[in-house]
Amino acid sequence: MKILRNIKFGRTEKPLIYTDKGKVFIGISYFRNSSVRVADSNGNHIYTPKEAVINDDYFVEWMITNREIALLLGEFLTNQEIQEVVSEFKKIDSYIEQQRSFIGRKIDSDEKNAKEFMGFKIIPRAEKFFTFKKNISKANSFVEVTFKPGDVSPMEEHMYMLIPFSNLQFIYGDNILVSGNKIGQPCFAIWSPSKEEIKEIAKTIGYTSEKHKNQLIEEITKL
Image 1 (tube, rainbow, N blue to C red):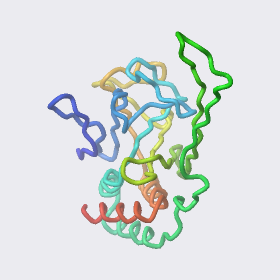
Image 2 (image 1 turned 60 degrees about the vertical axis):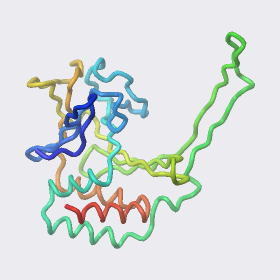
Image 3 (image 1 turned 180 degrees about the horizontal axis):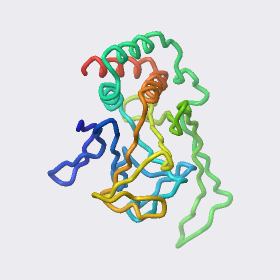
Image 4 (image 1 turned 45 degrees about the horizontal axis):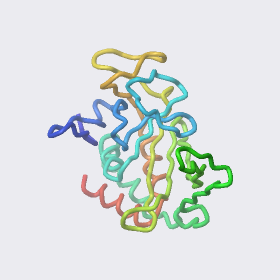
C-alpha cells in the first residue's frame, strides 16, 4: 500500500487516498476535507456525503496535487514509461494560463432585486468564472483546471480530477456498496485506472502553466 494523502483526526492521521494492487482508494465520506468531495453533475458539493446515497449522477472531485500525480505515475508506470512522459512534458510550450480572457473571477450584484430582512438587505450575487475541462479518452473521467485568487500570487491554478460514480466501486468496511446504498463513514471509492489514463491525466495537467509543469517534473524526479 502507498499512501498519497492522509486526513487528520485530532492528533492522529488516517489514509484518505492510497493505492493498493493497481487500484486507487479515495475516501469520500469527509466533507470537511476540501481536497476530496462528492459533487453532482453541476459541480454542487454534497454537504454531508455520509448521509447521501450512491447515485450515478455524482462524481468524486479530487483536488489533485503535483506530488500525488507523481506518486500515481510511480505506482502505475515503469521507469522508462515515466521518462517518456517527462520527455513529452518538456516539449510543451503553450499553456492554458495564457488565455487571460478566461482567467479570473467576477462577481455581479443585483441590488435592485434585493429583499429585506430585519433591516438588512439580502442582495443576490452571482459569481462568474471559467473552468478548463478535458475529457480523458477511453475513460469516463475528466480533468478540470480553475484559476482562483491566491494568498500569495494573483491567481493560482486548482487542478481537479473528476471521476463519475458509475466508473467506481465502493466499500464500507468489508461491505461492497451499490447504487442506492447509503455512503456511510468511512466509505472508499475504488478507482481502477489504466496506464494510458494515468499518463493522459499527467500530460493534461502539464498544460496548466510553465511553472506548474516544471514543478510537476521536479516531483517526478524525486521518485
